[in-house]
Amino acid sequence: MDGSGLGQYPKNQKLSEELKSKKEKKKKLSEEQDIIDGNNKNQKLSEELKSKKEKKKKLSEEQDIIDGKQQMVRWEHLWKSTPNLEFRQGLPAKRKLFMNFVERVLLLRDSSDIKRFTLCCDVLFDTSHVNAWISAAIWRNVQELEINLGNFKEPYSLPHCLFTSVALTKLVLGMPYTLKVPPTTCFSNLKTLGLRGIIFSDDYSTRQLFSGFPVLEVMNLYMCNWKNLKVASICAPKLLHLTIIERCYQRRGDWDDCEVMIFGLVLKCFDYSGRFFNDYCFYNSCSLKEANIDVQFSDENPDESSCSLKGANIDVQLSDSSDVSSDEGSDESSDEGFDERYRQGSVERSTQGSVERSTQVAYRMYKLFRGLSTVQKLKLSFTAVEVLKPVEELLPHAPVFSNLMHLEFNGVPLGVDSVTLLKLLENFPYLETLAFLEGIYSNCENDDGILDPVPPCFLSHLKCIKVCNYIGSGKQPSAMKILLKNAVVLDKMVFSYSNRFAQDCLKRRKATEQLLEFPRGSKNCEFVFE
Image: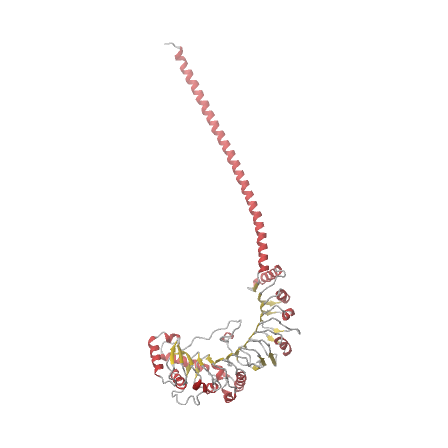
């Protein structure tokens, strides 16, 4: 074997190791370069992403600005085009914000018309601002305007342009302040008027006001103060519906005591609730078809929320009467509650005031009653009947209500043996429906001779009697006997039991059986239980 071959083996091995080492270094350098290149690439990508985000953010900010401007344009357009605006002041601490808001809205509207505008706020020392808002609404041809103002800290009068508006069709004005009317007053298109808490200033300006409604159809006078007036005339030629609700309480000696003359050439409906602090009389009211009289005569000082006029079509919320107190668990307790209600309703109790005041109320009620002789439907409170006692001898001289077909009594249960009631009924010869919405009673156990003479309508026209809140005990059954015995042409007797009594099936059945046993003057009379 040649020895030179053995000598080359270590040399080749060394060369192989050097090549391997170079490859590893090259690989390492390549990996390091890849890392460097990757870092550079990531950095570049990161910078690109950052740049894109900044561009996107900038575009978003620019878009927000554009959207904000568009939103502002839309908001301005919204206020400009919205036909109804309603501003009601909130907390006193936010009054400045409220005022700024109102002024900005009215400013943005330019000259666009307003259909309905409502403003409820305190005036304080901002008379000029408040009147500017009202004037702005008038200049924009507002059709329906509601203004409720309070807390006056400086002399105040409404802007004159209000009293000559040609666009107004409805005006509701509430403020416990003296109403100053300019010499020129004409609401040429006003059809609905509501005045609340207004203090009428004097005879002349009030006459100017009430004579400035050539097409007025609905007038609501709620809690107004008439004490500065001796005589007031309501003479709107097209007035259809008149509602008058007096202030609930006035100090003795500080009563309004105004003579209110109502000229109702086409008047259809009249609603009244109060204590006759004023004297009301009708002239030329032959068109009157419906009346609702709720007399609240008392010397006590009630909360104003106790004033109510059922069925009055007015723009203010009035509380309903309380639930019937006869809705107790037993017959005895129910009867006691029932008796208590009519005892509380009696105007003969000692708290009713002086004889002089009672007589004044009686004459005023009688005068008003005479003016209602053309009505077809009449609603009277219990007290409206009872206050007539001092003048009941005049009732036979009252006009005959030839058109009256429907008569309702409400308030508290009514005694069918009341002399005043019987004399009233003599004036209603063609009455067809008689309703006692709070129930009835009779103090006489024997029904003989109670209706003597029997009212003419009981003998010829009375077809339906309705009695509500019946409990079938105490003084109620005797009252039912009187009605059933004397209504000789009656077709239908309608009953409704008190709520709690109606839930007791046994008591209800006994009361029903008792009613069916009562003698009836009419052979055709049927019972209807609601």
